[in-house]
Length: 274
Image (cartoon, rainbow, N blue to C red):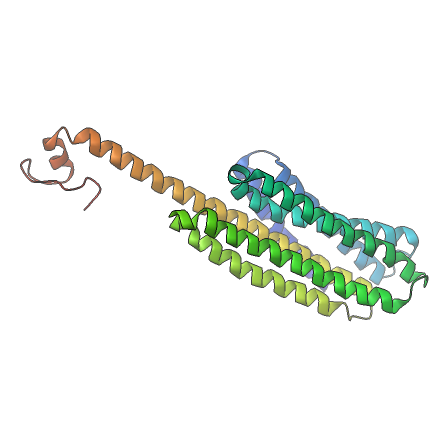
């Protein structure tokens, strides 16, 4: 049933990714990362489903493949999240963006390596089960905190770099990001709760749905950013054109009066008013 929900939900994720590809009309690095996240999530969900059906044997190769796929998933998802910061910091503070990107990848990489080193030995009873269970819940809390830190920094950057300079059209962006941060953290809480499931492959299948849900959140966030930027650009173009026409047409009072629907001898205070 969980596998069916995952297959049904992935359709919407693929469609949203395709819409963004069609909008840019090129396979950017961002689109490739989203595609990689979708493929890795589907692959991990399929492995877990087949394992639950005992269609494939549990061996070292399967454990290593699952760990590699999980590493790719986490790295790509954080890179997609950091891509939002790139839109804001690439022009104002590119060095800060690079610091955040590499710091996040290093922290995530350390978590991946520790998990990779404990997962397979635990199944072969080379490491006590309790050690892995404690670490499994701990690293998920760490990933949730890293997720929250990136979202909080994004909100702070929007407020300091845009809203504080009078760009009030970006206020909804900060509010929307706060709401999706709460939603994303709720998914992290669910993932931690799922670690108490007796079968780790059932947990792994549920985790793939969470990965896809988080990816869909990032796609929705990207759509919202583009929408706000387009609205802001249209507003700026309208204001610029209005001012240009006001300066040009101020030399022809009769022309302005006709456009404003007034008599030629009436006073015109502003071209853009109604």
